[in-house]
Image 1 (cartoon, helix red, strand yellow):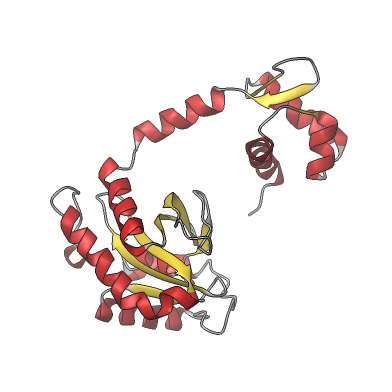
Image 2 (image 1 turned 45 degrees about the vertical axis):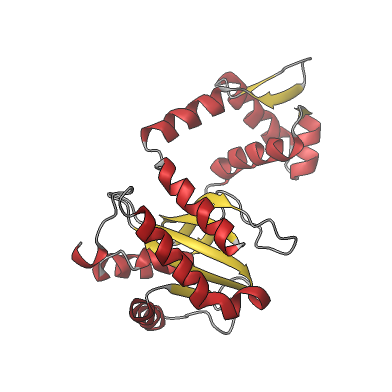
Length: 252
């Protein structure tokens, strides 16, 4: 289900994140392609609730610090251990490729932490980036931590679109790929979702969470390095096993 009003609020935030300065109602309506009347109503509501203010003169809006205060409170209630970010950063430095932490979001996997490669040609990823949970190494490393019953509940909601020739387009194809991944010890994607992008992922099973650690980069540079990258990921997990309270997936 897509709720337009909720999406518009998020678009306002993304708009100001890119603009980085106050804007008038007319500027927002024109740049976002919204009717002025609905833009006026949305800005009025957000201003009345304290989420927008007029920093210099009337008629120009900017997000208030209330967004940051709420985000910090939410993040503090369930933070990622600092060692997880350190783990990700070390893998990114060792592989030279963009590295991220993935988390489940319905039928998607979403990045909740990212360390981008310094290479000019790289996988550009940001926190909040979403991928199909069944059609990415990030997502399948999460699905592997679900019970078969839990996976079936997810599968019932998925439209098995073919993004590329290698995309798994059925429940049976996803399950077969999960079995192959269990045998080799890592999950991989060869342009399954994003063209010319290779990904290698492993489960990062913290207590009460199902996360994945993924390395991704251009196919021409990463395809032949997949076993090497997988070994780096596995070695990093072993180094941090005494610091992070990992769950034993085989016994859970």
